[in-house]
Image (cartoon, rainbow, N blue to C red; front, side):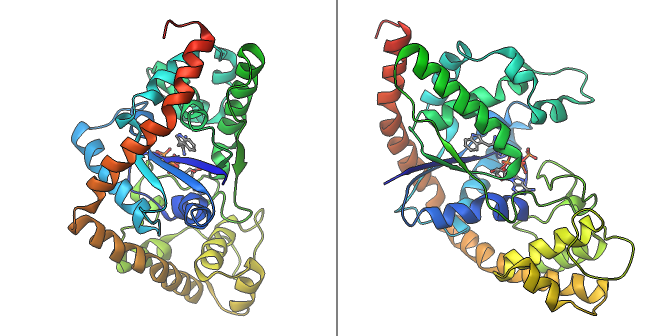
Amino acid sequence: MKRVFSGVQPSGNLTIGNYLGALRQFTELQQDHECFFCVVDLHALTLPQEPDTLRAKTLEVAGLILAAGLDPKRIVLFVQSHVPAHAELCWLLNGVTYTGELSRMTQYKDKAKGRKVITAGLLNYPILMAADILLYRSDLVPVGADQKQHLELARDIAIRFNNRFGNTFVVPEPFIPKVGAKIAALDDPSKKMSKSDVAESYIALLDPPDVVAAKLGRAVTDSGREVRYDAKEKPGVSNLLTIYALCRGMSVKKAEADFAGLGYAVFKKTVAEAVNETLRPIQTRYREFTSSGAVRQVLVEGAGRAAEASSLVLRQVKEKMGLLV
Ligand code: ATP
Ligand code: LTN
């Protein structure tokens, strides 16, 4: 069985972008892959976080990953900082990664822009991500399009390490959906929807139905009145059409046909209904998981299984690099 690994940061409210770009793929892959999913709290620390909020969000994100449709009996779900091997391998891989590679990353450039000070963590972020993936000898990494460049770096690091020290890591492949890999922000369709942005820009998985309807009602659309898919001329409408099509499990073409001759107001109201239908079962399961206290238990078991699954690779890396083990 092929191995799958992916991570989600507890850096805010999980969004419909996170769901359509990543979590939805997790639920499909769990059927016939050995899956490891991780709440990457150490990654969140690369930008300032309020400690109590980070702790609460870590548990919330874990609960939402389960509520998206993952079966805790089939998959391993854990918190990154509970398995020290991630930070250890990250340090070891620091020795085979070049600063030029890191400073070229577009996410680094975007997140560093306009900051008075830039932490070393923000620059080194992709090394920790490479460690997450390589530690489990993962074959496939389901992510949104924004993570493609980080994954390419993880592959380069794996190849470089294997060439220098002998075959150790599996070179991972990205698994990026054809539709929905980059859901745009509601208030600015030129930007990616992002959970660490302002609330108006995203639909959170825990947003109540009236909030979803209000946010979609205010979403930036384009000039003209026609509802049609045209990513260049009508990025706002095209984004909403993509969200609608994915929520209803249909092609974008079919979605377009649904709105032929209808105006923006009806369009936005119908998109809100489709989004709310998608969110309802997730919110129900989330409440069940949290009220039963099951999430904590899943995370304790997950950390044990992840530690076990990663220990051999970490030991091999240490030996190969010349540490006294
Ligand atoms: P942040 O704003 O804090 O950087 P984020 O919203 O980008 O967070 P991550 O935790 O970094 O979320 O991402 C979790 C997963 O969701 C990743 O696989 C990422 O590629 C995917 N993802 C994030 N935003 C989107 C989006 N707008 N469209 C599609 N996929 C997305
Ligand atoms: N960098 C990713 C989160 C992440 C991840 C990973 C994704 C951390 N480690 C390993 C896939 C595999 C992000 O910001 N979305």
